Image (tube, rainbow, N blue to C red):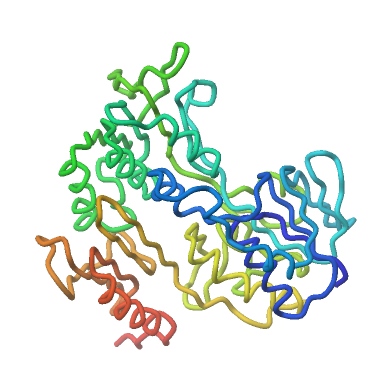
Length: 395
C-alpha cells in the first residue's frame, strides 16, 4: 500500500493513524475529518468541559511531537462525501478526491434531533467541542434547562447542569430509561439520583418538538404538555455515520458490517469505532459498540488486518463504558439483555455501592458496578475470561 486514508479524526481515527505508523506503514497517510479541530477526547464534553473544569485545548489526544511523528496530511473541516471503491478514491464534500490503496472508516455517529430544534437559539445538541462550549455559555444558576433524552450522555448533561445551579428537567420517551442497558432492577437506582439532586424527571411520554420565538421557550410533549425552558439539550440518540457510503459496495446495516477482524466486504477497507458492526469471536451475532473503549481498542487489530490484506487477527475486546453523575461512578461491561438474571455479588443496592453480574445460559455475560471501581476491575477480568472461554456443554 502506498496511500492509506483514515476517514474520521476522533479517537478511533487517531488511534488508527498511530497504529499504522507503529505497525510499520511508511507510505502516504491522509486523515480526513469533518470538524476543523485536531483529534480531541469526547467523554469530557458532557462533564468536565461543560462544567468549566477543563478548557478545549486540554482535550487534545496528541501533542506536537506525536502529531509530527504521524507525518500525516490533514484534510480537516471537509467531510467525506463518497467512497468510490472502483476507482479507489475518497471523494470529499468540496469535490476534491484522495487516491487510496487502503481506507480506515472511523466516521463515528451523528446525533438525532427533534422538530424545531435545529433553528432555535438556545437549542443544543452535544456532539463536538464547539457544541459543548456553546451550551456552557448558556447554562447558569437559575436557568431552566430541559434535557431531552435519558441515555448516558443525556443524564451526564443533566447532572452537570444541575451542578452549575440550573433548574433541570429530564425528559425521556421510555418509562424507565437505561432499562435496556442495565435491566429493570438496576436502572431505577441510577435515575433515583436525579430526583435526589433536585432534577425533575418526566419519563414515559416522548417529546414532540422544541418551541421557540426568538429563542427556545419550552418543549412540547406528545400528550400536549409543555415544559418551559430557557435552554434545551436534545440527546435522543445517534446513528452511525454511513450515509456517505451508500453505493460503495459495502454492506450497511446499522453501521458498516465487518467480520471478526473489522474487515469489510472490501478487503482494503476496515471499519472501527461507532461505525463498525462487527462479528465478535465469542458472540453468535454482530454487534455495534458506540463506547470510547471500543474506539480505542479496535484499531490495532483492524490496522494489522488492513496491512496484511486479510483477516489475520480477530478483535476479542468486550464493550465497556463508564459514567460519572452527581459524584457517583457507574461502570458496565459485556452484553446484557432484558431477560438476564441479575445477581449482586458485592456490596449493597441500598447503599448504592455494589457490583452485579448478569447471567444467561449458565454463564456470566455482563457486569455492572456503582461506586465500586476496584471490585468492578476484578469482576471485569473474570467476565472477559468467561466470555472468551468455550461455553459449557448443555446436559
